[in-house]
Image (cartoon, rainbow, N blue to C red):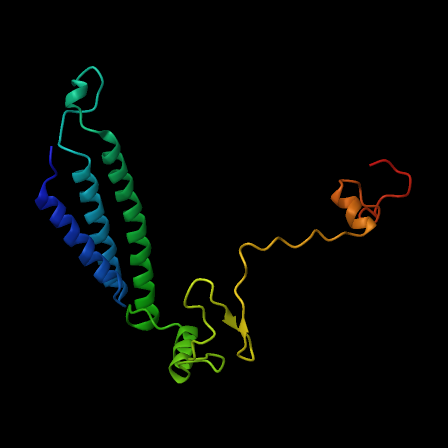
Length: 191
């Protein structure tokens, strides 16, 4: 049982055209892109489910001849979800056309400001093109602010010793209640 190559190619073309249209600025083209991509994915689900068979009703069809009902159920669910997304995008495009006279998505003000700043300053002042301080090989250290070599950490070195804590921190670490933590209860009241 081999998949139908024609349906696989059609599915790929639908998804590719849908993704291309999703990258456009017009909400109408985005809507058509969503429809094409979802139809391509639905066709791929049906191709991947295998050859057509009998109705999946126990007792009516031989189990070896039954078609798998799960991909069909998933495609049906995907169709309903696509219908909801399509209705939302259609309402969004209509509202955008009412307000602006067109359905193109405008640049975000913050994105435009960031792009303008990035074009003006391609590299920040703290960027150093000199790569002497960057590790190129295993075991090579990095440079500090003055450009001096800092040795790479020794993997054979022992861990730092455990630091002793004060009485209050030690009591909390041992699981004893902290006297200062519960000030809302009067003295002598049971917890």
